Image (cartoon, rainbow, N blue to C red):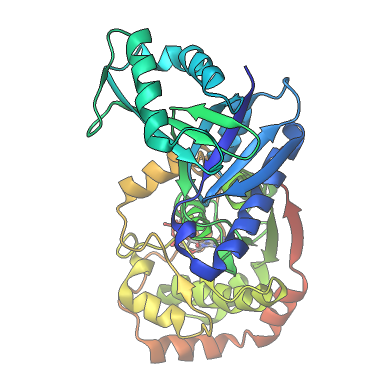
Amino acid sequence: MKEVVLVKYGEMALKGQNKSTFESILRKRIRYRLQSLGDFTYSSAQSTIYIVPQNEHISLDKVIERLKKVFGIASICRACVCDKDFADIKVKAIDYLRETLETVESFKVEAKRADKTFPMKSPDICRELGGVLDDAFPELYVDVHDPDITVMVDIRDTNAYVYAEKIKGAGGLPVGSSGNAMLLLSGGIDSPVAGYMMAKRGIRISAIHFVSPPYTSERARLKVEQLCEKMTEYCGDINFYCVPFTEIQEQLKRCCPEEYFTILMRRLMMLIAQEVAVKEEACALITGESVGQVASQTIQAMVCTDAVCHMPVFRPCIGMDKTEIIELARKIDTFEISIQPYEDCCTVFTPRHPKIRPRLELIEKAQEAGDFGEMIRRAVEETECKRIHISL
Ligand code: ATP
Ligand code: MG
């Protein structure tokens, strides 16, 4: 039996005049994600994209696995293709839905008739097909108010489609529909989750990572690249920037009070990230910070960090518990990579007694003493970029 995949978009459908822009970005994302699985044709109607595989060897299970990670999709359905003829619809519905209908108790039929020349009206289709299925599956009863399953019949221009199963999509908005932002990506648990959350809102992510060789190893950097690679499944291709941070950190150690290390480091990271962000036409930064998680993540510390930022800093994990962040990290499959024990430049230079409530004027003074201007310029200049492609 010939099958197609229907993709329904949720929130996007509410966007009025922008809807077609969102839809074309979503289609582009879907095409990119499915291209290595074979040829498909695409068409859209009524907040639904119809994906028709062009040969029977294409695995729809794989198609669905990939679509489940494309933001902007509310739900995904596998549907059976029927002739536009009620006799064919009847026979195929019984056959195609057999397995599903044998596992539930109640059902109803809903019909949509985009082609108004179809001889039966929607209520007639519902009533007639309801009767047919009721007869074919004696254990089943019709419940129009709270059915276990809704059988959908969709009459379109060239064919009719029958389906029942609805798979939950990734939700959100298609990546690229909300502009660009630069994610400060460490090797930890939180920042990949932060990137995922902002990508879900349609933001295209680039990532920046700070390394301090020889204090941090090549293996630690590779771990972050691996995280990026995992994130591409949801975020699409990512431009990954790697910043040499050793000189700045050694200067910090020489010239600044130890209790300010972390907060100064974060400010210097922000300064560099903002400069690199320009190359990506990114107009916001993203971090994985969460209030109170560690000493450097107090409100006062964030005030001191944000004082050097002319871009907004998005911190989507800000109100989350660690357990909630971990739950998401497991869902997006970054957790196991994140817990590999490689050093981060922040942890290498962690002060023994970090200042929990830093005062901005003292922090600014300490930073001045370090005279970092030239070093920041050099770090930006020596930053390397690598495009991390979605694994297809
Ligand atoms: P994470 O789990 O994301 O590492 P964390 O709880 O370990 O977070 P910190 O080490 O205080 O927190 O870092 C706070 C944020 O600063 C991180 O979420 C990340 O956005 C950024 N950050 C820390 N280290 C780096 C780094 N080496 N390169 C890029 N960004 C970093
Ligand atoms: Mg960390």
